[in-house]
Image (cartoon, rainbow, N blue to C red; front, side):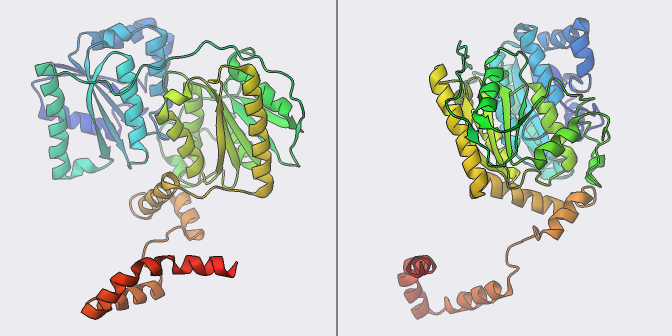
Length: 458
């Protein structure tokens, strides 16, 4: 059986992910394995049709494809995303159609599910038969139980190919509507009340829907609005995964391009609007490049207390996974997600009203200082980072450790002596049948007692 590995690590073979692949290759010597470093070689793939065809030709003669990658900012690396864009731009779907596929990732399990769902959707858009995924913690390979599980995952893929198993689709194809937005003049500008506004966009043409939506927002705010186009700033390269920034938040590129300056301007703004056009099942690879390079700040939130929102051109309502990614990006930054506006309504006048209201909401929330309470996406992420920085990542991410320690973020359970004592006493009392019976009768009233006290006092 011929298996093609599409390596999504910028480090090529010197990556954690590829060690899992090499383990499988050694365990299944009867299969022919071809490893294609598409992420590391993205510049060659963009510049050379011949090099690109070598990849697609290898896929065309294979029996199965394994999409193998490390997680980068809730998704795959920007260069892997660019490779996927090239597949559709160069109409390479034929090489992938009806091939069996599986997904293998390595991470600390921070939004690994959104990356897997994205690749699953891409596989289906390419006409592939995706039989499942394996999400490994970075060092699961050290554990015998996990090695056994990984082998079962691979056997399932090989079995599906051998038996030509029927695989159901999980997602509908993405349908893009034909709508040209023609924005009108704002009826009344919204006073920014001395709040600074910054918009980052990846608009490629001055007359596309995204550019017109950004222009409308600029006109809606009364006062200066800073706009940065990602296609017009200097970006020397993507995140290399070197982790050198972990010690002191200094990227290896540092001041060699404009990334750090743009992030510093965003961190100084009160209101941040991110505007992008949907490409396949995400935004553009240019946006992904910008997000990835933001990792120089490690696991420390950059936009604490900011008002943030998204302006999206494209079928966001069809992409629940993308919506969750965008929402999670804001909430894990401890910012307030005011909302998302898209051009899906298909009516210019209605879109004008939505954008005008969006601007007012931004200002109102900024003036009030409103930050929505954290939900599972924010709380779960914070606790995951807290535990990982405290234990496995503290040595490398020294800047993160200093931040978490100085702000009391190592708030592990049961640190309160009062809580531990009271719970210990109640645990002993519950061994007494009479107390246990009374406890059962009063538990609902006791749960709401502190809350009713607040209401009475107010």
